[in-house]
Length: 154
Image (tube, rainbow, N blue to C red; front, side, top):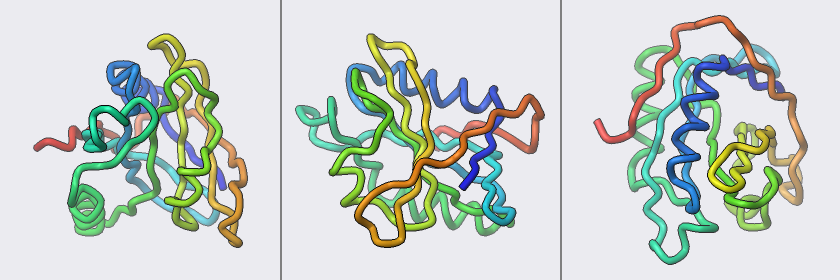
């Protein structure tokens, strides 16, 4: 799988994740699917609703966010491509918790945030057997598609 995202959108989601440090932050990626390529046109920032004492290593999107964002995307001819979240002071590698909560065919963009600043971003997809992740190709574009950043609290 390849995920293409503009540097502007990646910067926006990174800024959000840096601001949630030392806790995990996250959200959803919306755009177009073309074969094995996902092209991000929107980033939806979603509040972490996991218990506050666990937010340093867990992320849970607010109730109903997934369905709302998917319905809005469908209504505009777009697709919910995947999910992004941070790993504060840890590598951008899926955890066992990530694996047990992942869905096949979904793009998982994990951003390592160390000391409050982005260290690396990596793309993952759950393997068909659901026992591991396969690293995908994260590509950056200078092109401005029909992109926007959407705050989940509209």
